[in-house]
Image (tube, rainbow, N blue to C red; front, side, top):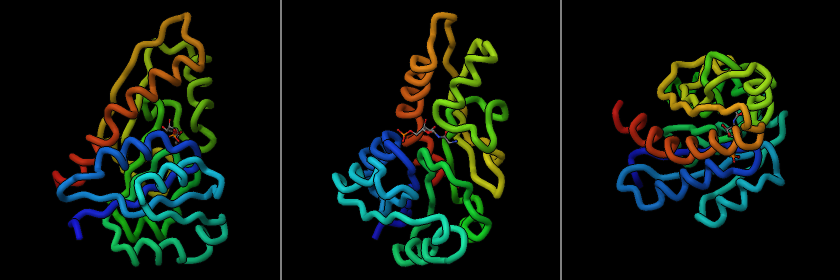
Length: 191
Ligand code: GAR
């Protein structure tokens, strides 16, 4: 068994989850053991199957009002949790069981454009509406509040007046795929 074992939480497409699973597939000391989703239809679950990563989906009640998800994590002896497009707030019991061991990626430059309801294309819409000249990604540790944990890494990209919400989203996604797996690796190994 490798010393560092990741569970990815993903709600939707899972393009970041796929990059992470590919990056760690043959890693000497880090492995992705689980992919968990609040959405039984999430494409992320199919992506996990390609990498033979075990999957579970769960309801809000299972996540909030029981320790079932925690049991799955403990059964696989998960050491780190990676949120990759996961849209629910992480409950206190998970934060307390994995203090400083949960990381998230946000598709903008926090502390701007964060908080409840700020996810996916809603973030890019808000950035465009504010006529920002740049946007980017923020990778941060997770605490009990949306988008407020310790910032680990940020990268930026410019916004042209001709950029649409879609092209802003594409620029940000490119940054996510380039950086997230490597930042996770350094975050795990350098502590
Ligand atoms: C990513 O852009 C990620 O930053 C964002 O959801 C997208 C998921 O894409 N996360 C948030 O907005 C969290 N607040 P993916 O499913 O293709 O990885």
